[in-house]
Length: 411
Image (tube, rainbow, N blue to C red; front, side, top):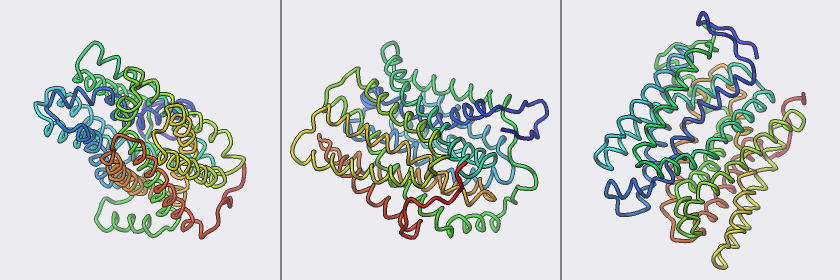
């Protein structure tokens, strides 16, 4: 990787360092959700939440705040560059984490989580924009896969960290740890990340310019429909995250082993992302992701049918869900790369529109699946299958009915 720095004294990052820093930025959102999963029960009990399904709103409030604010941070980063809006978002995020430690009510917690999500939106939008600033085509898909692979380490270890914190302290300490992580990432951005958006590629921050950029994104068939497909597939993932504690602890009685099971699923996605990074240059984004989407739908169908015949045994649940997550690890980075590829000239705004649609759409769909939890895995399995079928429909529209057709030459 070679970049030019507009900030004097900041060294150029190597490719490995670049991938690691982008992964840490994206991990802000993973750690904000996964580290507190073991503490949801105590949060609910501490703040007087009677309905256990309502505890899931701690996740939903964050996701809605993050999704909405992405529409703001994208155009802002296209005008003022990537570094300044990114550091501002990290500051908002960290301050809210500290404020939550002292929150007296569940409503106050949800409000702060919403604002914390607003700050975190900068990390989601701008990290993808930075990758697009520096890379394109299959190389961008490779880098996104590597970022996702490192990023997936967080869901592997975050629930275990949360469980460890809960053994020695109350749930408030979880947010202290989150604030410290944000401070670490902000320090690394300040010291190591050069500005990747050159002056001649910046867009005016005016209503006309922003609306024009949004029009470019929303009228691009490939970008729009891959974004919609990703939103629905993400909805299935958020559905599991919302109800994971109830399923793995409530149905299967894993107790303190819940973080280990969660880590295993996240590890499966990390392996898939690494596999994608090794194969995408040779086989292309479309061949890998289209095959994975069909596999995702097939596994979801088997899971749904099995759940209709009675309780799904733990071993079968683990096998089917792990297979689905492996496919997801091939779908996510490729769909995002294909959605961003034709929009490099408006990368910040494009990333914000894509991120808004994926996060808000995924959060709402995931919340609906989570609230449908009835003590079985049937609502989750049914949701997975329906969403995969809808996602496949959007991909067919994006590709004019033709799957597996490569658009970029092999490297």
